[in-house]
Image (tube, rainbow, N blue to C red; front, side):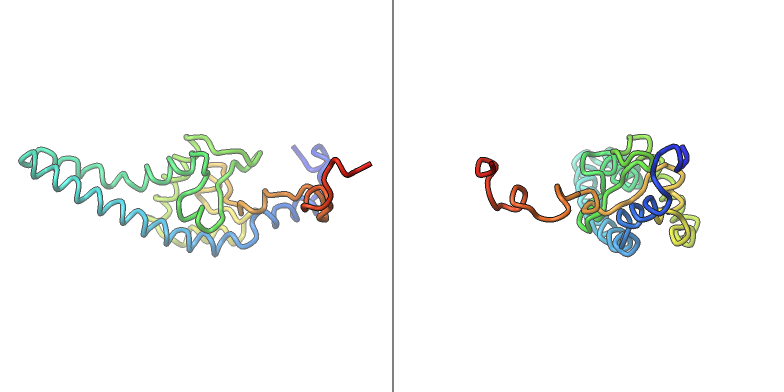
Length: 178
């Protein structure tokens, strides 16, 4: 669909994109750091639980250590596809992941592709994340591949009116109106 077909002017679309993604890149960096700390904590707890289980089962439970490398995949996929639409770090910094086409909740498949592409990007080299500096809506390579975009949660909180009027700012009650 082109701008002419949608009825949205290109200038308005760019303004809307800027409102959705203003300040997202720096927040994503800090969110990643927080997610790293959270995953390290979860991995430590799982490591201790698997170690204890392995001791109790005389070593048979230690095969569960093979599950630990899958923690980032489960963490990213399940949280992005959840109603929260963000990892713990992203939610803490006011971000959310949405589908690029309609700003809806990502599907489980999109969340999985996004997480796997992110992990591949980080394994190959962080420089690929710099794609966000030149793309519309500041989308990284894994966002482009999976069809999602990271936006500020607050950008979707549209006020009921342009200015605070009596009915949405706690002034006169509806019954007080003529």
